Amino acid sequence: MTFVTLLAILSCIACATLLGVMLTRDLLRLANRLAITGFLCVIFWSLCEALLATTNDRTTALWLTKLAMLGWLPWATLLPHIVLAITCEFDSRAGKILPAFYTLTGVFLLLDCLTPWIHRDVTRETWGWSVVAGPVFPLVFFFQACTVYLAIHLCLRAYRNSLLEPERDQARWFGLFVGAALLASATFDSILPILGVPAPRVGHLAIALIAGLVLWSFQKFGYELFSRGTYAREIIEMLPNGIALLYPDGRIRRVNGAFETLVQCSSSAILQRPIQDFFPAFPLEARETLREFECLLKPHATQNRVDSETLNIPVALSSSVLTDRTNTPFARVVIVRDLREIHSLQRQLVISGRLAAVGELAAGVAHEINNPLSFMRSNLSLLKQYWQRILTEVHDETISEALRRMLDEGDELISETIEGTERTASIIQDIQRFSHPGNEEFVSTDLNELLREAIRIASPRIRKKAKITTQFGDIPFVPASPQEMRQVFLNLLINAGHAIQEQNGEIQVSTQKSDDAILIRVADNGCGIAPNLLGRIFDPFFTTKPIGQGTGLGLGISYRIVHKHGGEIVVESTPDQGSSFCIRLPLERNAQNADVAPEPRIPSASSMRVAFSTDENHQP
Image (cartoon, rainbow, N blue to C red; front, side, top):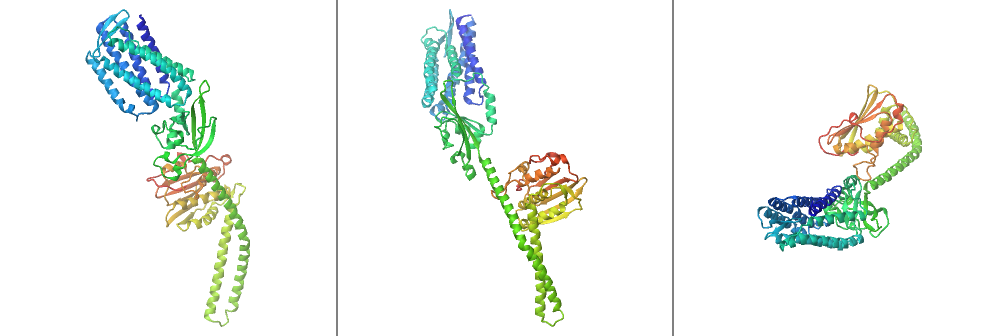
């Protein structure tokens, strides 16, 4: 084995090692894929050189020389492409002439295969085969030198724009080492053959040395050579929070999908932009770990989204500075958490607290009204008796027809007033029962009576746009908590009223006995529930109503209460036609179910029937 063969094998091993390192990295990045392609070209080049050193046939040696060009010429063209992919400067002049480079590469390769204009012949030397250059070979060398020079120029410009001191120190040694390696490669592989001086080709060795330098650099600055980059990328992509990797000067180096979704920009429009383009209040000068810094997403970053909720996205930023083994900062990680849902929950909790306070206030007002109403009812009843006696006394007397008519109308007015006070007293009594916390004890309960009370309370809010029809069956009493079931019925009635958006609506309330359970059905002919919302209607705080018109707690609480009673809720909905909520309560209480309060989620397919045809929204 000659030293030329040994050098080719060592070059192949070095490049294959670095290829293995690249394969463990993020293969979705264009720069990594291009680098892998480049090292495959060098490995192919090295294999051709190793075979060339072992053959004794002149024709075979010439064709192996031509095949080697399939490795070293595309590699030179890939160099500026890799640098452009890393720096994201495809819009620059270098990026625009890149297709011309690939076109010339293809032309030269085709010309070498069909003509002797590039590799004219080979000559046998003591160390192997030497290349005899053709008339076009100097042009190929000039083209290759231009591509390598462009790559070096782009690298130096990127280093000058970087604030990383380790990268600047690294660039000096890189420049010296790479320059020496490329100069040796150009001298032995191109310049000497052009001058007609036989010389071994060592370009593949120069590339192998550069590969070794890259591996050493990885290890020196604290990177794992065979890190599980693919797994790390998949984990980062699965995280719900936006993650961005920054350069020390604040330019964005890499982001995950959640970050793209949050700022409504593709990664190509995000990379290399300052982080303050998206979050102006981000404290870039902070060197310590930053936790939960709240700010707003900059409006223009959302692109064509004009609604106020999207243009003012509250976020919480957390960041940490990354350092190398010399404790020098070289990057910063930023985690972005969307606070819109949290703020929405906070608003809902505030509204829920207000409603609770209003409920307590209503109970107090009802109690205060009940006192004067009691003596009003007593006085009216006594007045009714006096009026009846007056009518009896004057019945036989001769009085005018007009006075008799006035006395009769007065009796009717007193009767109607007494009826009004009775209705008012009944409503106040229902409000007091509903607002009373109760002891949640299960007692024998008349569900029909609870429904009548809930209807009386809900009627003032519903009767303007819908009528309530009832069909109560002859059902036995069931063990239940009256206070809690009263709340469930009221929630369903109010939701049915909200679903009816026009007048002349109808809400049907019915009860019936079925085997060992009682069925309570509340149906409406409103807008129905959209299919994409069915799975969320029992989620706490979920609502499609505007802020201030709903807390999103009604159905969730109802779901929990019904399951606490050992029952279930069955939903049937047809958008644009209406919805039906059916509650099934067992006749006998199951003590085990009474102690279990499941999460307010949509029931399973076995306990829920859904029919839908269009895409309208019921308002849960």
